[in-house]
Image 1 (cartoon, one colour):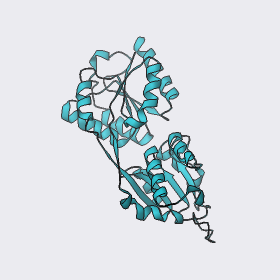
Image 2 (cartoon, rainbow, N blue to C red):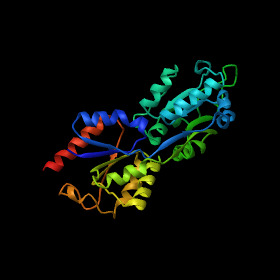
Image 3 (cartoon, rainbow, N blue to C red):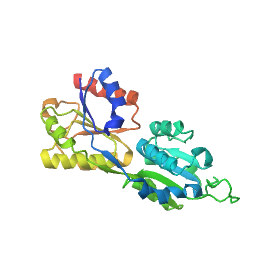
Length: 279
């Protein structure tokens, strides 16, 4: 069976890992991102402006957890707010739901998917301010819960149309343990690499430069912009897992776009690749 490398943060990888292992795939884990929360004092001034906003965009489960914790420290109940909420995916929406928040979720769990929602397609937002005492019918700003440097494309798109309050809730860094894990994988390289963010891909390349490149035959990528970037950067790469080379792929890796991180969807894709390996 194919050897799959999941590079999602450790706290988000277990569900997919379990599903793949249950299906018989060999799964290795190499977290390429670690989230470090900002202190409350750093986020308090921006978060306090939530009464003014019309829409809150939450781009990750970590952003949901940290943002809600910040509201609790400010003694603000989500039920007191009248703004609309947008979550990048079902996992993020589930965390918000635990606090009584119903969020809109895009079919495609990416920045492009969120931007395609009706709430962002309207030239004028029709939502009221989060301040229930306000008589103004004009829409307020959009508050963006994210990590430092995250979702730049979406942030710029929204900021070109409306005022955006960017709330940076955490930093992203390469886990210290990942360097040793990467070196161990060199002895048993994966055939399938799962990449879910541009930052993760950049850290993967940096590890390759430092310890020796691993270029699996298949790279599964979430998000069309990252997909295009990786396609361009891998066009002249040679697959380094030569033991697995066969007629199913050319010398360069095959980059495949994922629509979501649903385990069933990824399993269906892997099953196709597995059949290809067996022919």
